[in-house]
Image (cartoon, rainbow, N blue to C red; front, side):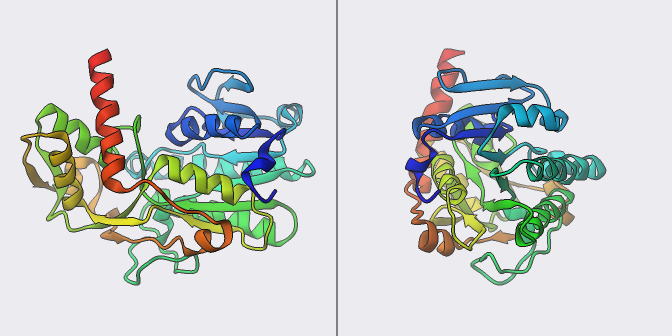
Length: 316
């Protein structure tokens, strides 16, 4: 598959389909003409062309996968976020590496099925050389990042051996309306709209490259449809901000009187030893090879998040 039109008529299995990224991916796949089967422990999208299987993706059997008859599996199901993962590193490893291994083995048992693994920029760890490219060293600090690294290395190794048709993507700080409040943009928006202080770790000088969810889905689809030799892609936005500047922008755009205050990582549920100071992305390979072009700037994306949160507050 070489472009998004090639999704027409394809059957796509999406694990974690009711999650934040899955909820944006499924409608986009349907718009592209695919038939989608989603698996999640929560109810997912409802509409023509979509079938939702309620349950844990880790329980999918070979017979059930064969029944789905997918042309592609997009594996999103995971532990959600570094904070949740830090509470039980062993369970995190089982959920991420164990489930990915299970799906790789299942897909290998079928023919003509592409496996798309959504990894994490946490695999890079505490780098000092920026921007981060796909060949940058991997030194994850957290159990979450370590499990993601090992899972993507499994996919890459099986692909290199000719046993799997695999693609790996690394998202960078994906955000957007509907995301959980333990992620920074959503947390800042909620605090600003409530008039609460916005909490930044230490001085708020940490650098992050932010990616609006619609841009990430576009990059993911382009990577998943790619038939060339490159099988690993950073997918990021085009703007890098400090966390402190991000907080100030949220306060300004929300018209809030909130203050910005310093806090310790532990106050946000993050052990200091897994705090990554800076994470600055290059998506040059995705631009060059896939024609990927992120379109939503951070100020525009924050505005979408504020509008959606305000609307949800009125409805409730």
